[in-house]
Length: 177
Image 1 (cartoon, rainbow, N blue to C red):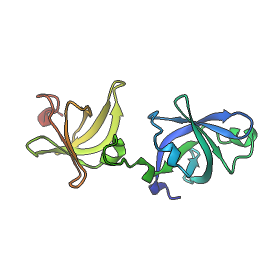
Image 2: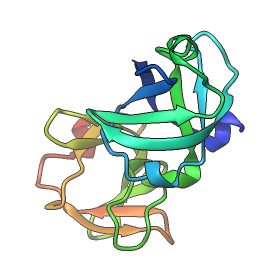
Image 3: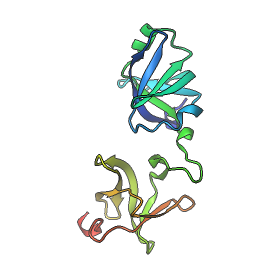
Image 4: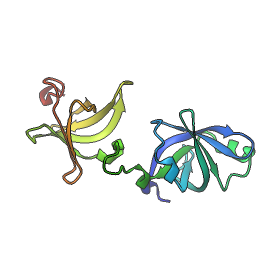
């Protein structure tokens, strides 16, 4: 697997049980993709190499999931993987029509107001603990965080790679971003 095709979604928290199961802490807590996962990648923080593992089984657990990999025979082997970064195929992070989107699907989309004026480009994501925030690079090169909440979202246009939002006056003032 190539890293460009892989998405970092969590880390191995610890070995689980005696048979080599891994407790994966998933950063978002969202694991809808887990049932479709056939392989995953692990990478040490000080390495560029992602090693691929084959999934035998998964199950939801706490703030993530338990994964059994064919290549991990026992608890000792699982303990050797603790704290590694956990990657999945980025194709698992694509929503179907009618499903809630994954934020990564709108990265690099233009942020527009209802009049179709481009306010900036979505370059990343953050959170204030209550809601997701879009990190937007404004047209003048500054950075702003915009709450990504249903009340503001008017349209997500995948064809034109744009998110149209009707933001309260002053929330996203390009002059003061």
